[in-house]
Length: 496
Image (cartoon, rainbow, N blue to C red; front, side, top):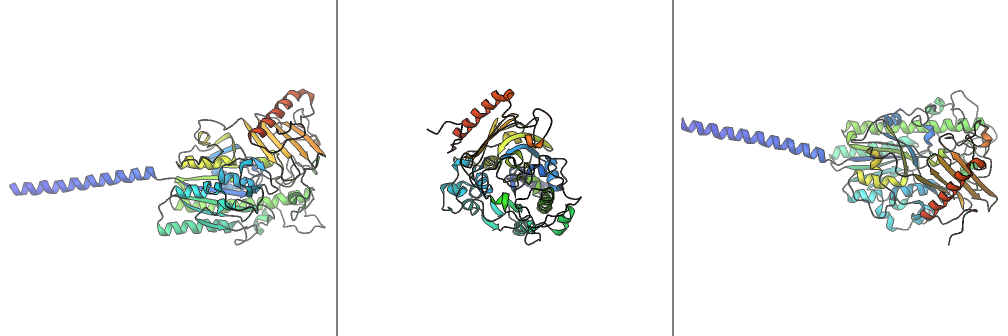
């Protein structure tokens, strides 16, 4: 009887030990789950105005259910902007700023001179390199060219190619295929390290060759005949509200490709051309939405989506008929602003914020979200305080540049409801000033739009707003000095 009791006690001890081990194992699994580092899917499209999307413009006929759902499940930034460009290819400095977190005038030479691609010290402080060092697996697919080569090559896996056609192999599906293949490989090898995927598209940048089905949906054709106009179609988007047949003065960049040589548009600004081109743009944008949905569905099937930050944005906006312009080389809101949506673990859902962020704020924010130290080379600011609801916006004042054409070019500054744009181009032949109250005139109507209402126009020449003009002029100069702008406009003091 005594031995039997001993055996019982030993058996009971073993059982208790097993249960205790199980409890510890489950506890360890929970801790590991809690400590699992977040993944990142950074989605960048090429040439997309926020006003194309229903998220920013409910009257738009562009259908992007994936992007709309992302907005419903995440945070929409009302004011996100690129800082500008000293290059006709606006995407080049914009992508340098995204990758490096540096301000416009502090970028490597390749931002302005695309062929100057010698290694630069900033290269090692860009997204791919930073996340590699932090133990992330990094992958990138995007267009080739007009970007930041020194940063692009830092990603461990790179599949870059320019895909602007209307088939699976020549268009946006190709980029999605690269990401899906990469995710399948992770799944097969049971890769546990977190990932950072830079998911870039070559569309909706011209030549905007959409799929036949989507072109038909938006009543558009891939027009190639310079001697004829595309036909109007009831399915096409209507003209933008701030459409003009011609900009009231020269934009200051002679022979600018985007204004004179884009296939299907050229110098035409008639209703037929602009509505057809918007239809082509929308066809390409909806295809991007379809491809994004495939990648998000794959992440969900893998059980990774809930632990992934998804950032959707563009390198800059686009005119396509707005203000009589066609390209991205201007500082109106349709082009200076970009769409910007963030969804991720523990972030609010269905929220809209002012934000007041630059694209150069992306890198420090990504570092914060991943708990990675922000490099000293970074000049942008993390906007995690906006994501967490601690503040509504990052800054009171925003500054923008375009001087890819004749110098010094265009400058803008915005504070509160007020925005100033100045033009000093064509060797002094064009000296123009525009002052807008964006609260009352968000589409920046000009006298040529013929709108009723005192504030629905350029107010720079209205004596009632002389004090506000002077205030904004002083603010612009202050921003130019602060950002080491190497130029001065005709009515500013010269650089000492």
